[in-house]
Length: 120
Image (cartoon, rainbow, N blue to C red):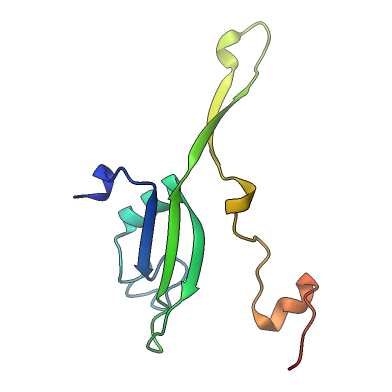
C-alpha cells in the first residue's frame, strides 16, 4: 500500500527527516524516507512526538508520531462590489493540546529563552 492510499490518522516515522540529517550533501532528506513522503507527511499531518534514538555518529534518527490534521477554511473578503475577489484559504487546525512547543534552543543559547539552569 502506498502512503497516498493510507486512510489512517496516525503515522509513526522512524529515521531521519529533512533538517535533522547531518548528511546534507549525500542525503538532505535523510536516508529513511523519500522526499515526496516527507512533503506529504508535513502537509497532511502534524507531529505529536519526536524522540531521539541511539545513533551512529553520522546519523540523527528519531521516532516521531504524526496525526492527520483537520483543515479549516478561512474566507478573506474582497471588494464589496466584486464578489469574486473573496479569497478562500485552507489552514491546518491543530488543537492546542497537540501543538509542539515552538520555543526551542540548543543548550548554548537556552539562556535566551529564559530557561533556568538546574544543577544536580
